[in-house]
Each structure stands twice: as C-alpha cells, then as structure tokens.
Image (cartoon, rainbow, N blue to C red; front, side, top):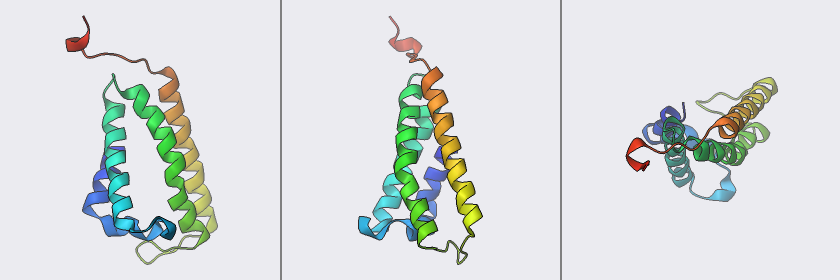
Length: 120
C-alpha cells in the first residue's frame, strides 16, 4: 500500500496538492517528499531487517501526514471537485488510527533480522 500510494505522489502529483497546508509553501515539493517517504517506508516494511525501523517510521509519518487530512476536513477542501461529509472524515481518522495501530504492532513484534550475507 505504501509503495503504491508513494508512486502515485509522482504520477498524479496534482491530486495530492490541494490538501497540503498552505503554511508549508509549495505543495508540489511536499507531495514529492512524502511520496519518497511512503516508498521508503513500504520497502522498509517488506524487508525483514528493516521492518522494525520502518514500522516506527510509519507511526511517525502517519501522525505527521494527518495534518493534510485534517486540513482537508477543516477547510472543506475538494478532491477531484468533490467535498466530503463529516462522517467520511471521521472514517478517515479511524482508518489513520488503525494504520498507526498496525504500525505499532509491526514495530512491537518485529525483530531485527540481518540478511544472510551480513550474519557472521
């Protein structure tokens, strides 16, 4: 999921730009930065020896990135010309909390495994 959405930050940058808080400045750069972060977290979660660190990064990322979702909610910012009712934003918040919980579980129960080539 992370890798897929991260790639979308590069292939459909304009879709993400409206929800970037204006105080951050140029939204394109923030969309690209978060795209790189999402790809890195996704790859990190796939690789056993980086999974624990990536899960911690995921938790931190999800807290930080919620600012954009909250901005969309509070300022009623449309995506693809459509605004969303409050219950959809609440569901998004619940989903975000669920993803944070999953990231915590992965962090908590993952061990740091080294690739066979580095174990000696």
